[in-house]
Amino acid sequence: MAFVMDSAVKSDDTLKVIGVGGGGCNVVNRMVRVGMQGVEFIAVNTDRQCLASSEATQKLPIGEKLTAGKGAGANPEVGRESAKESKDQISALLDNTDMVFVTAGMGGGTGTGAAPVVAEIAKSRGILTVGVVTKPFSFEGRRRMDQAMKGIEELQSKVDSLVIIPNDRLQYATDEKITFANAFAIADDVLRQAVQSISDLITTTGLINLDFADVTAVMKDAGLAHMGVGRAAGKNRAEEATRLAINSPLLETSIQGAKGIIVNITGPMDIGLDEVEVAAEMVKDVADPDALFMMGAAFDDSLQDEIRVTVIATGFGGVSNPTPGQEKGEEVAAEKEKDPFDDIFNIFHNK
Image (cartoon, rainbow, N blue to C red; front, side, top):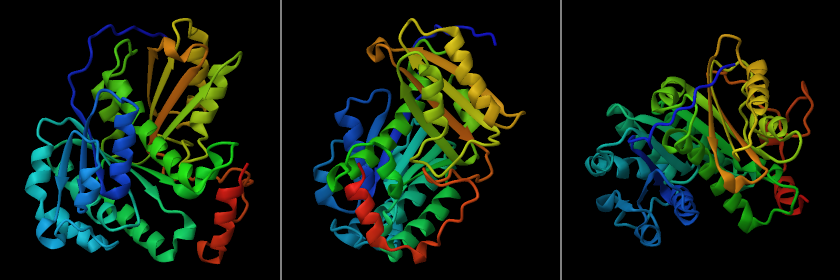
């Protein structure tokens, strides 16, 4: 496999993140706090109090006539109508935008109802539109889950690509005990990593053969997307990091048979060509043989001995990623038959 170093200057493409509703605004706050570069941050909400504490560069209260700034009351219809009421202001925020991430926690009122409207406005303007959302914990109740699934279905029809992170899988994010407080912090950070991975591909100098056109080719009108990030150090760091990116325990998606693939490797200056090839071959072995395959690399000495591998995959036909510990072919119990208290126990006692 031959690689040509692209020494071009930083991309002029404009990327924006719009956090919709309380969950989306929390994600934006986390991105700002960690000093995420290369994107502009926007917070959109029906709740003025929530917006007041937002650290986004731009803040837009929506549905002022409908809600008087007091929120959507967990009613997606109120969120939807609020976004429609403010569609001109939303559109104005999207001026001079090449790509937008619409992020939200699904199941409530504003995020569930307004995110599809925001996405529709963006996509209608020719902006590459990617949704990055969470599904609620099972213990939050069937009504909230049903609302979330309806919102996700609607959002998927309005975006180019959609990444879904089920909160129930957060217990597999770490071997350490997960508390109620850090569970939501982990969810926010997963959303941040998904956005950061694409932003880095486009805006970081020193990439190999990757630019905005490549990302567009893989993600435009692509449906469900898999974005996995793996990090590892030591002798087999490339193999281990790639395995983690391919089989992310936090995602329900699998890259098996994917028809569009982007692999990006970030590491110190001593990263070997053999390590790049190991990562590429591991991903190609799982993807469709005729997949559109793009490879990139960047250098970051702050990683020291670590390598970070990002895998973005689309066109995999809805193949699911088994829950960690679940054997292939094992039947999954219907959601309605699960005891929600089992989920609570697992989240608070997983070690």
